[in-house]
Amino acid sequence: CTDCGVHIHEGTTCDDADEVGGHYFSVAEDPWTPDGGATYDANKKGFAKGSFTLTSGEDTYADNVDHAVVIHDQNGTRISCGILKAMDSKKSLDPSTKSHKSKQSKRSKTRGIPPSFTLRAVMNPYPDYTGDITPSGSVEVTFPKQNSTNLSYDLSGLRAECTDCGVHIHEGTTCDDADEVGGHYFSVAEDPWTPDGGATYDANKKGFAKGSFTLTSGEDTYADNVDHAVVIHDQNGTRISCGILKATDINN
Image 1 (cartoon, rainbow, N blue to C red):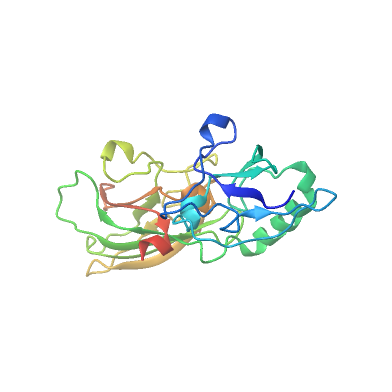
Image 2 (tube, rainbow, N blue to C red; image 1 turned 60 degrees about the vertical axis):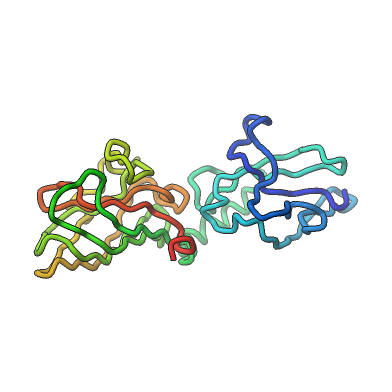
């Protein structure tokens, strides 16, 4: 099979052919073409290995995670489909790739997702909050090892000397509607987003707070957390600030 297509598609499923969609791009012209280099050449035994680079206009990790990849036959027929996931995603690889899975799992345990895959939330007032606290700053989330989420914060405008005050990732993916921010985001047996779990900040006399903590939420990959809301709480538990976790290359 020569100059056969391999493309990222608009859809985020391989379960329904009608929902896989067309080529995924936002530049003026479709780059997922032979002229764009988006092809593979199979040898006489049906093996193909290679790579190519292009500009789709959707060129960040966050843009592409969960999108479908489609392989085409010589005549253009769609013959294979797969969903793009983080390398340490909890979903298993196909059994035929067992040796690759083993190597990746070993690497994830020691290195986690590369540091470039940092999520950052720029903090803004919580929706419908009418108090006199005006937090600002940012929260960054990384995944230093398997089953581990590290949250670091650099905040100002907090209540002076707010001690053991909460900073948490929440279930929701919006800061526009207070009803949709949801509760703490976790899938382990007990909520880790508590003072006992270390999910707090201490503000100084001027309302500044800077620090970090690491916990296990059961949702401990980049793909699990991207687009989720981070919430900052006041001393009495009131939600005072909210921000959405985004890839750092689209926050800067």
